[in-house]
Length: 164
Image (spheres, rainbow, N blue to C red):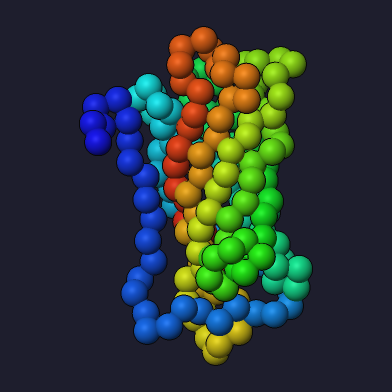
């Protein structure tokens, strides 16, 4: 793959003998610990201004919110999705859909759409305790394909989170 005008984003966790055993109840708001600089598909590099990740282990649901500045615009995106088997993935993984928010320079344009996916890392304590962290990748799209009329219709990046 020619990466001249693109970037490759990935996140991985440490290898372990077994995946983490997640809590069966409770909600945890993870704290942003780091991220790659978001990029669009024509080579512009942006800034991840903020990101949140909240896991509801009782309902097996994940929510995220991203705020990205890139190429003169601010993208605010929100999404949600299932954890584990409900998402068709391993119990310590998740995936979801971005379907809320706005793009600052485009009034009247529908919210960005896209997807995210990720995994929880091993807990710092006994099985079933709060995971030590999570890794997440995301892709956002301008649903009307008119983002500043320059072909930069998609943004990619990864973020890592730690338990509070």
